[in-house]
Amino acid sequence: MHRYFVTGTDTDVGKTRVTAALALALSRAGRTPTVVKLVQTGLAAGVAGDAARAGELAGVPYVELARFEKPADPWSAARAQGAPLLAAEALAGALESIKGPLVVEGAGGLMVPLNPAEHTGNVAALAKLEAIVAIGLRLGCLSHTLLTVRLCDELRIPVAGGALVERRQCDRGYVDDVTRVLQGKLRLFGILPFAPDEAAAVRSGATLFEELVKG
Image (cartoon, rainbow, N blue to C red):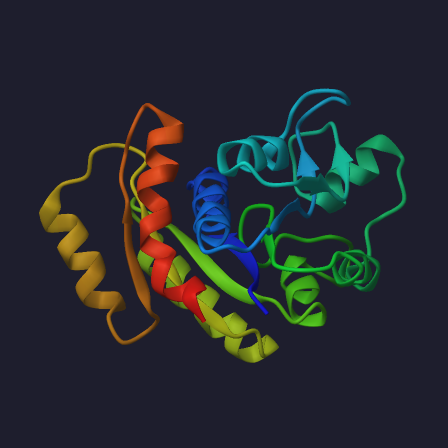
């Protein structure tokens, strides 16, 4: 089905680049995915968000399901705006109404709260998406990655794999250590390299997902 949920080991770890790279790989394979931003926070109406950025980088359609201006988790951001809280079932229903391949970008990590009882992982489970973990190469990523994989298992979310993301040039020894620890815990697609040119990084990153999108 090629319907994926890109979640991160933290906020600002490169989920949007991973989303764009995966969408571009699907497009190159002859499929036309839709990029979806589950919840955009921290931006006013009319300002291009992550969905637009990823969709334009990949050259595919994109949509944003919800937006709040406060730069916070969706629960807090909705409360600050006096807006109704988001519900996992409604968001999953919106995803299920979109036909064809999907690349859905979450908001931060898998347990970012939507309301007092639900988080973004519940949406991925209800919509039957496969998880792609964007692993920001910085201290703490090992624990966050392994906790994400464990939660996916508990929620019965299949994990397609993880992509290592450089937000700056990384020491090769550190990358080797991260790779060694995560080997056997989840499929590692490789490294989305650091590049000031975001479009170049996405084009390079798309090659990481070629095998995944063949089937």
